[in-house]
Length: 434
Ligand code: F0G
Image 1 (cartoon, rainbow, N blue to C red):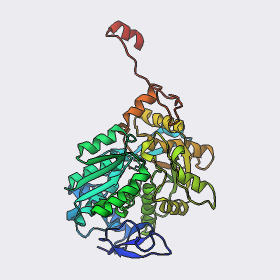
Image 2 (cartoon, rainbow, N blue to C red; image 1 turned 180 degrees about the vertical axis):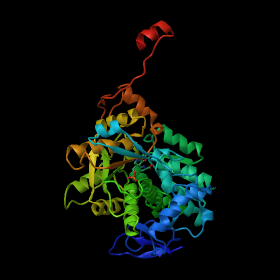
Image 3 (tube, rainbow, N blue to C red; image 1 turned 60 degrees about the vertical axis):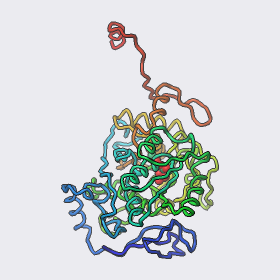
């Protein structure tokens, strides 16, 4: 096992710390931290074969679509701490009609909603919870717009840890809140937004010795690298032209970008796909920042969007996200509430479905192809981050024409599919069905 360590992401500092230190920011300069490793002794060719062989193996860590690739994030000193619910193994799905809507010849969705708790958070949480056990922690905490908390609750409980979750009161979907309750988390609904609660939780975690499992935790990012790694494995290590994903706290783009860079560095792939991050227009500080050269980063004080998963105004990982976008030659786009809602219905009508935040991908792709940034014949993989059933209330309102944006304006049911109430009468129903 090569030596692993924590390193300050701020290159001017680059301080190094043991991987067992409980820190989330650099104690010297306050910068973000990342996990780093000594040069490996294996070759990419050897590892590609090993990864394939593990798919045929029944050992839980080889069945896991995260731990199967463990040599690419070797921060644990022993497998005994691993908590796995057989996460990952999420499919690549083609959707010709969604491609046409997005202005593409072809689109591939990497659907992270197929994970055990229905979102991509499981990729990172299996690593975060395993590290918590390795450190001998008893309690873990996070603030969440819903998916992180659902995932943390499940992994903590599965691993014998006590989950404590903080959520913005009234601002997460019932599907996600229900998961946290069912998985046994102590659940605190705070009268504040995500960004305010994150600051609060950081203070409490420090004061009470609770391990923080937000994406500021570098081990979460290590796990989420697997989304890119598994995708490349599924594509026989032929990178697409673009990978498109929604952006909230910007942990996921940081993880996917790091994963891709490391794959290239180690010789698994020969080129980097371009990355496109799509933010909801009412919660788009990163879009604003990247749109204007020389601008300083400003958070959005009152973020708004019905895609509550990405309702974040002060994303902690923006410096990492910036590096990944610039390295990959990527772009940042924003999408309106109407654009997200319509794209979501199109993904649903393809028989695939996803939660609102995930649909920002297709909404953004449509704009980027129209603007000539993405060409119709390029191969685009969009990451659908959460399951369609995460937010059923949104779906019902959209299809019945009752969905309103945060300002109270109606969202048109462009692709609405409202249910019809019929009498208990075969003749009447037959007439209706033609
Ligand atoms: N899509 C979904 C479904 C999410 O739940 C999130 C984030 C994102 C996209 C954005 O990912 O933050 O890494 O840029 N949800 C977090 C949560 C914030 O608490 O569940 P990001």
